[in-house]
Length: 105
Image (cartoon, rainbow, N blue to C red; front, side, top):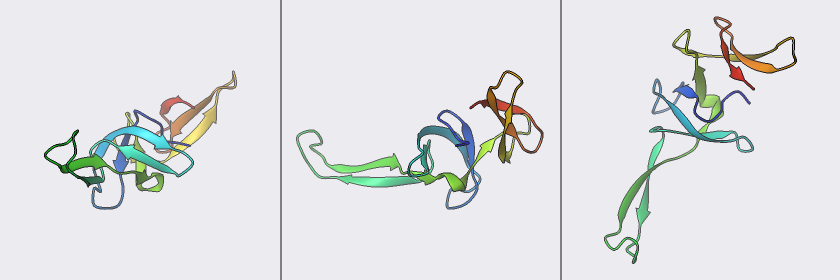
């Protein structure tokens, strides 16, 4: 999987297209990620002891990983991500556009 928590990503399709934000959580089984401030939905709350007024809560809904691109710190744009092995056997994520190292896998 190419996208991890705390990565900066760019939304490439949908209502929030072009937005850049930080990944809060990734679910690899479902292929979805929760991104800060992206795909906001309202959850309606019934009145209860905890919420005596009731109301609407605005939360982030999951976004499909295919709709996100990792932002390269060197290129400063959304890029495709590849993998490269070092001589000592560690695997690194690399930018396909400029070849910059994006961190260890």
